[in-house]
Length: 448
Image (cartoon, rainbow, N blue to C red):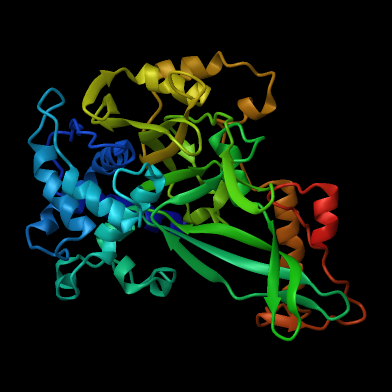
């Protein structure tokens, strides 16, 4: 409870320090499509909808903290146009930002790209990549001396801006070496502006994607002197901020041989349902006391088409109002309409799928949402459990318990990471090998 109270207090303090109190909600603005730039327009609307980030960046841009001709500078140049525009005003020309975006992604101008990739790149640029070395003092430091996790993060991610949206996770690899012993690696701390969630063909809702994120996965563990060894990796969230940006990875890479090997990919077309309110991420935390509670959806990026082409649009929330953003056209829409998208997992048709969900901490569920939830069919267990708080699956918890037992000696002390030899009375723990995707029998045999 100490960790949870500290994290909740941090979010409240960050929110209070942002100069948004008493200001009007930031409505989206119409953006011109200069040619295959719909993915950039959707990403811009999503970032702008995170108002704490927008106001902090706009405040810092007055001090010219970003490098010249950078993506972050182009974004800050757009902010005044956003803030002084209305949904019915003349469209904003984002050409400068778009061309710098294509350059940042190493793509040809006017080529369609991934909105999630640009969103991630833009957030990294405004957080630290494009900041002038001499301008770091302008960033407020998010220092908590009693927080042991914060000390292990990079200095550039200890700012109030980065702590608003960065996701920090930890992973650890285990391998059963039989008679040799049991290997466990050091904890690897990772950070990203987005929480990348893999979508499998059988995934039906956001909670199943979160459960898969925290499930043990097959991994080839590199051990000095032994080389790659079959093992598994456990990944858990360590810290989240006021915003959590869930990027749904739908790509399914396939290799086809027709005279030559060509890497191609398709995408999983299954819709992913979600709740607008009271979304918990507790199941992704190893220590659930570090979770910050419930979140609500304030932004959705959607894609219609195929894996190689299509069109991006966005739904964003400003205050209590929702807006549908389709390049130059901004249309107000009801919350019931967005709620229906959450129920179905797709938009106007089944080909318009959700690619990104932006969560903000936190809100209460409206009465109409509770009523609609009670009318859902209970025939499918996955659908009925999609809106409840999940815990780590049995297979994961059992795997964690075995590895925890193996990591504790008779006197109760935890051994150092590495390979250790088991006594005659001890049995090596059983590794639960759960591959992320099931391999065909012939492929699995060849891989072994």
